[in-house]
Image (tube, rainbow, N blue to C red; front, top):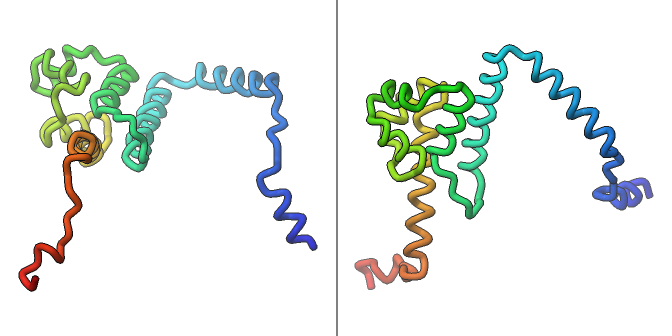
Length: 157
């Protein structure tokens, strides 16, 4: 009898948090964040971007997020001038902007340098590029490809 009652309760719980409670929690968090040293706040935000990147890789979303968007967030978090960052990367300013906008792709050199700068593995940057390339390819060719029957191709037939 207990199990049946328990099964009925699953999924029926309601959030009893009021808007006033949510606002109070937000105010407490905002006050805490204001007290953090800027380096610690930036590090927490960097970790947040890294988690967003990993989450994007695992997601099945139809939305495409270019690697440059993540880079742009990181540059903003650390308040880095893009001209200085382009110089650090060893690329022209226009090429950095093209990278951020997705008109240029991360290569192994850029992924390594950016990875070292922000302590985010180069593989993560490259995996995002690869995911986006596969999405683009599948969207453009999905209807044009015919289903491959491997047995039809075998020599025994």
